[in-house]
Length: 192
Image (tube, rainbow, N blue to C red; front, side, top):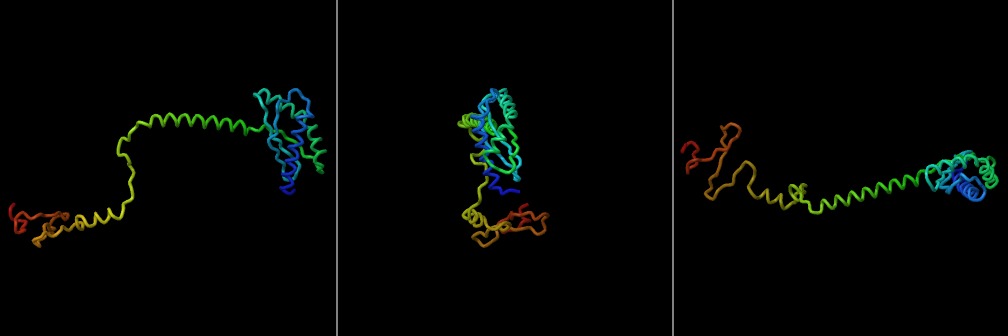
C-alpha cells in the first residue's frame, strides 16, 4: 500500500498529463471538446480512473468515448514517461455525470421556485378557516394564579357573608351530586 498523499499527488499529475496530451497529442477527429475533471488512483497505484466531460450531445459523447479508448495506450505511455513511477497505472475513462446532474438539479430548483411563487400569490389574500393562530401557547404564571384565586378550590364553594355555606355536598346522593338548599334556613327537604 502506498501513502494516500502519494496517491493524491500521482492523481493530480496524471490529470495534468492526460489533459495536455488530449489537447496536443491526440489527433483523432472523433475527439470532441473533452475536459478532464478528476483522476482517482487506487491505493496500490496500479489503476487510475480518469473522469471527463464532453461538450455536446450524446452522439459527440459516444464518439469521444471511442476516441479515448483508442488513445488509451498512447496516453498511458505519456503518463509513464511524465510520472516516472515503477509501474505505470492502467487508465480507465469514465464520463463524469456530475455537471449533468448539477444542471438537472438546477432545473428542479427553478421549477420549485416557480411553484413557490405561485403558491405565495394564492396565499397572499387567503385567510385562515379557523382561528388566526390555531396552536396552543404555553400558560403563563399570571394565568395560573388568576385561575387559582378566581373561583376557589374545586368542589368547595365560597362562604357567603352570613357565615353559612352557600352550597353543600349531599353525602347520601349518588355520584356526589350537589344539593342546593331550597329554603332560606338551608334545609334541602323543605320547599319541594
